[in-house]
Image (cartoon, rainbow, N blue to C red; front, side):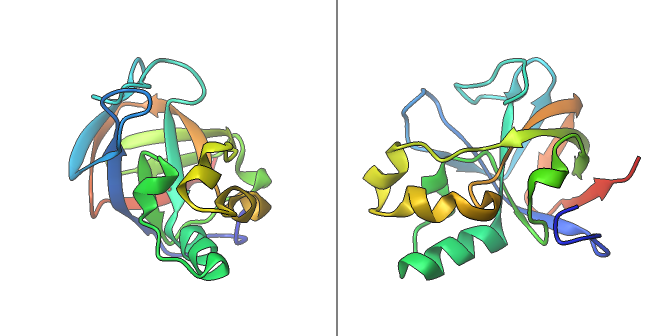
Length: 155
């Protein structure tokens, strides 16, 4: 498990979506996560194993420190930013409760070459330790809002 066992819940600190595949990410305060569309209103929304992307605020901070930058998390193009939770390979298959929704971690969200267009070296900085975040599938639909609790559900 990442960071061993999470003893305190984390928090949802950001939500974003895009109106078109390469459009600027739009920060929002609340949305529904559905099994058919992922993040409602997101252009990449569809069913499947990569419906919702989740980025750890701690990992993003590490990336910015390493690069000597202060990039906004929206540059990573993730849907959700969580504080108090980090990710690693042992999290694949685990369930993450976010507000009223339940997400299953399906894979690492590998950084693409577009990240270096945002900031030189960003792609390489995101690659170690799953700092680019995770892709998830919606297991249980629900409403999520900035400030919601985020925690692992142990099976």
